[in-house]
Amino acid sequence: MSLKFKVAKRKQPVGKRKGQTVYYAIQDEHPHTTWAEVEERISQATTISRADLRAVTIALHDIITQEIRAGRSVDLADLGSFKAVASGKMMDTFQAVTVDTLRRVGVRFYPKHSIRDASKKIELELIREAYTPRPKKAKTPGGKKPEGSEGDTHQPGGGGVGI
Image 1 (tube, helix red, strand yellow):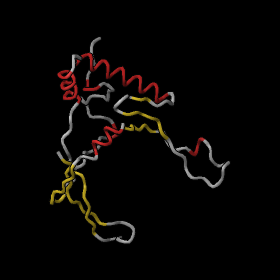
Image 2 (cartoon, one colour; image 1 turned 90 degrees about the vertical axis):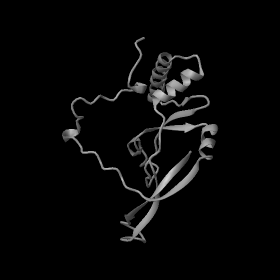
Image 3 (cartoon, helix red, strand yellow; image 1 turned 180 degrees about the vertical axis):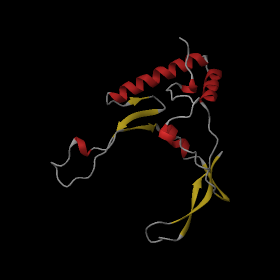
Image 4 (cartoon, one colour; image 1 turned 45 degrees about the vertical axis):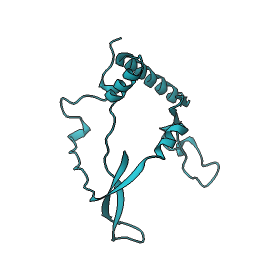
């Protein structure tokens, strides 16, 4: 499998090429593995049932959330680790650096070497075809979800286990 790219164009708004049409490679959409497929593969490769796997995943989510809120990183063995990260704005003096000059905190995942090394083996492929962006979805007034849409849950696969 390879990462596929198409050629996109745009008019450069600033810089040396301002007003010029420039061309660049943009990653094409690629297939993804759903959580249901991951569950199925794990349950086939081990003795863990899908229900047990969901219960473990929900518990893991809760633990990671609690630890991140407490300002701790979470090591997930051969997968990698989650860490809360923030950076500060550049200030002119030592005294000007305060908590208010810190930027918003985010969460980052840092994969272990085996996962990072796997990415180095991915083949890249350029498809000599023009990129056409997907049409943007219309926004609903007031930022509300349309009737009948489900709320966001933290449960993988959109469901839980009745345990």
